[in-house]
Length: 447
Figure 1 (cartoon, rainbow, N blue to C red):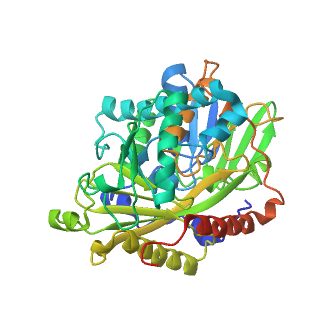
Figure 2 (tube, rainbow, N blue to C red):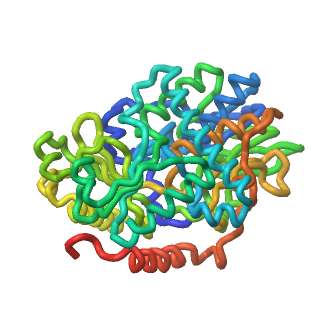
């Protein structure tokens, strides 16, 4: 297995996250042992892999085996901020139109809406206690210049997608509970909702098991090889043969499993903290009481929301090293940014801090489909830090594709991502990009 970052970034121990603390009894599914066969093999028990497995088993009766390096929810699906909203690509609407045309852009937007609805239906239909707040999300301008551009963005969303986002002027932020020294207006989108990602992914795993899916924990795949018209997956304890395989490991992928993926993906760190519970008075003192999901419009964005128990979640991008020392530095950095944006809460202690990988592609759009030149081998990856909905729905759709059913996969996600130039230097490119983004974003409040 060849990976881009240092070994501590892939430590199989569970992260000390708020989600893990809230769900203290993780799965302990046994590993693959000996020889096994399946109609479909899935690598990765996260949002994409479990949705694909569930769709194939429940709707088509396929024999599905899922292999995970640790257990369901150990990776990004159990570490994220719980933002179920628009996303998947790191492209502006104009860039999407330039790539796939206006109809293609609308199809991708419909795909995103369907993805949000898909996750909501899974949660509601199965009675999972996973929803954590109202629908909609706020995009906050970090400068007057960015706020000035929101009006044009709202017009473009109306013209292209028929959406009517709400604009909140700087002077109205306080009465809307969206105050902060770094906020200069807001654009409110109507779709999406916050969720508990661990409750969701564990619900998915239980539902898949009930549908007959076999999930093997502690089963990292160490080799993928062609095998008589199908594929053979090797783990430390056994081998699994299947005519069709889905690689759904996103930022935790290995560069050589399969070799095709190496250089097309770029894992990047995202760090999250959760504070102690805040009192109503503390929330009012800061002036930030809005219960919706929110993020700022920076290239190196901050994302944040109130949790149902009064705690506050705050996350950001930025790390480029997987060492333990770098992780400690990332913890310090995320706290510094939190206090700059919400200074009234500087005395609210951090209860949990953790990090994990998001995944970018060389084309800044997801890939969902069959790997070129490798019949039966499929992949779904590249959610660019916003994959709760997109990965889930993509998993369902590729589960349909792999069982011969019609699948809603827009042109944008079916295009093969290009390789990063000089793939061995991807972390160097990331550091340079972050430096440029930081200059464009401007300083933090009070800096």
